[in-house]
Image 1 (cartoon, rainbow, N blue to C red):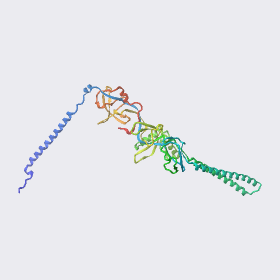
Image 2: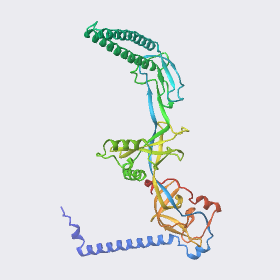
Image 3: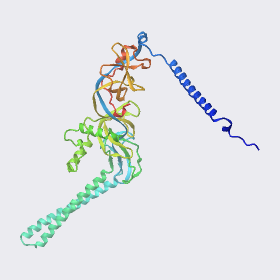
Image 4: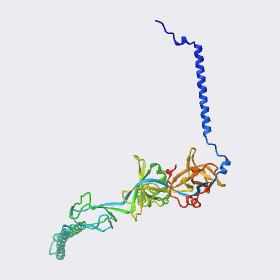
Length: 446
């Protein structure tokens, strides 16, 4: 059998190295040619930049503009809240008995002290009459014992009876006096039991569904009670904010509290009972100036304004939130217990903030920018920094000054150096931010 020669023995090594060198050179030159062709294709397809002459010859672009305004902007924190009754009472019977009548319609408003239910009171009336009769009997015995005592005193003065008999009669009078006092207490207890047959509203509020119909036997131990009454004017809103906002809330509360007031900080241990009472008073009354606005969930509709009354004494570690509570007047009953709402806590004002319509701020490769209108009517892009944005307004901290004009609509048609014209005379006034702006949330920054 013939033995195959290795490949290297067939092709000389020097010729093999020459072939590899040629092949490598060809690859490098091919790669360079491809890069040159790609660069030429990109450059030839790139639109030529507009020259100053072309910008001058172009007709003015119709846009809407607004003026940068400087004014105080409220600072706010947004949270998600739930409406709660300011006070809620489940009305229950205090004694067992048959429900005879109901003095309200389901869902209507009842006033404090209004009769809302009546129980069968015949047993209680009989007990009261029995207690009154018992007192009358004991009072008669007491009157007779007093007369006997007066006679015994006279007899003892003349030595007709001994001292022991007189003392015994005095003790009998004292016993009967205590018995009459006990009878008085029994009468008061019977009257209280009789009053329990008349159930009145403990507060002014709206009733819910009646849970027991007349004719049924009710017991003092019934868990459901007769009806639930919710006080909805005023009404409460409980809401949460991120725990990172605690320092801002605490600072705002201390700033709004009167000098030396209880709201300036938590009561100290050394303060004792007086400090605790002051803290309780602060929690029961609104914090002056710390306003709360309530809006429909996901809607711009303002449902009510109120004041902060409670900052919870701990942060929920599980959710990382701080619970707050506000009190709001609710005469139109636009807020209802159980309703989910958006809440804005107003912490203060950002003085002298530069405000532009939010639509003026654009986002590009280099960040946020606006088109500024020069005195000659031409535009130029200006990089800006925005602190917050909400309700169609943006607070700009860098890049603009008060009185400058910026483009708020039509930016897609612009390029640096183009001349612009106002689309409508009234558009500038409509777009320009004026008056008191809505509160601004620190967490709304873009």
